[in-house]
Every structure is written in structure tokens, then in C-alpha cells.
Length: 279
Image 1: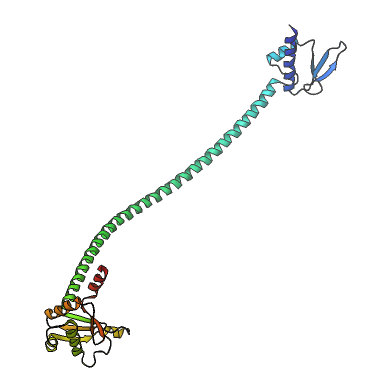
Image 2: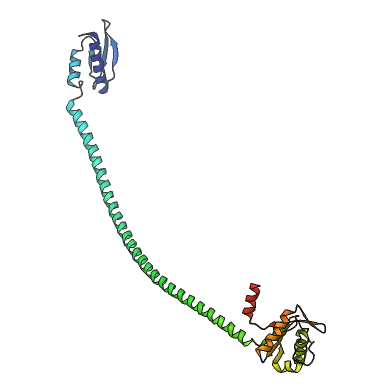
């Protein structure tokens, strides 16, 4: 056997001794050879020398243990350790399985409760949607009714406006006439203003016969307004009213005895507002 092989085998035997817990001690023999002693167990020990390594190498090849350590004891200790480890692992697995089963049971109960709640919410949502559908239909019906009522209201307003203007078709109103300028006889004062302002061919008596009523508007008196009240004139015939109005509109201003005034047709408030918007 060559020297390198002997060194490798010696190193393997030394490592085997170290794995078994032996601490080698160095000593020198009388022949100058190095001896390494491995104390295996108690006070007794076993040793080998570099000169005689065949037995130790064969034991290392066969897996033999050093003196004082039996293979059976080592296997028993290893087996018992493995059994204890396996038993501990199995207990942990059992505890984990039990906890897992408990957790799964709780989760199933929670899921069942949630499913029941979700089903209830779905039923309530469906009922609300059905009610909303009915409410939408009723709302659309009410909206159509409101639109129809609004249309009828507008028709009635237009009709009332027409009737009001028709009832005033024979009326004229004098504006900006100073207060107390009429004296004691308002009708004679109005006849004089109209006759002089518009230049009617009829005399004052004929004009007076065509006037049915004359009065001042009491509305501005109730409002305590500083503006003079308007004078309302109701004629018996529509022709006389239109004749006076047409001649008054042709003149830029009407003035009689330092009294400046205006003659306008007596219309409803809504009609006058609409005319102001258009002008």
C-alpha cells in the first residue's frame, strides 16, 4: 500500500474517533513514531499507531464502533429518540387537526349565518325594487296628471284674461291727472278734457250721454301712494271709446289748462305685463 492511501485511511479513522466523542492525545514512542490515543469510555482506552493501522482501517470499513460503545445501545438510543420525535409530531398534528376541525365548524356556522342574512337582504332588496317599480309607475301617472292640470290651468287663465279684457272693452283710463283738479263734478271735468284734447265733433252733452260711469281708482289711496290716482271711464258704446282712443294715440301729448295727462285702454294686469315684456 502506498503512502498516500495510508494517510487517507488514517485520516478517516481519526474522523471516526472524533465523531464518537474521543479527543486524541499525542505522544511519542521510543522509535520516534507519533501515537494518537482515543480514550473510549471509563479509564480504559484504545489506541492505534501509525505503524499498525490495518485493524483500525478494517473496523472503519466495516462500520465497527470503538471499544466501550456498543452498536445495540447506540441503535436503541437513536430509535427511542426517533420514536419520541415521531410521537411529538403526531400529537402536534392531532392537536392541529382538532383545532382545524373546530375552526372549520365555526367557519361553517358563520358562513351559514351570513348566507341566511344575505338571502334575507336579497329578498328585502327585491321587495324594495318591486315597490320602487310601482312607485315609479304611480309617479309617472301623477306627473301626467299634474301636466294635464297645468295645461288646464293655463287654459283657464287665458280664458279669465279674455273675459276680463272683454268686460273692460268699453273702458278708458286717464293717467297723471293731478289730484283735486276735477273739482266737484268729475264727469263734467272728464268730458271737458276729452272734448278739448282729442277734438271730437260731438258736443259735451252728447259725449256725456255716452259715458255710463266715471270714478277714481281707490287702490292708490289704500297704498298711500304719492302718484295721482287714475280715472276710469266706462262708455255705453264701444265705438265712442275706440274713437277717443284712436285720436288720443295720434297725439304725442294731451294738455288742457296746464293739465298734462294720458289716455290708455283699460286692460287686465296680465295683458299689460305681457305688453311690457314685448315692448
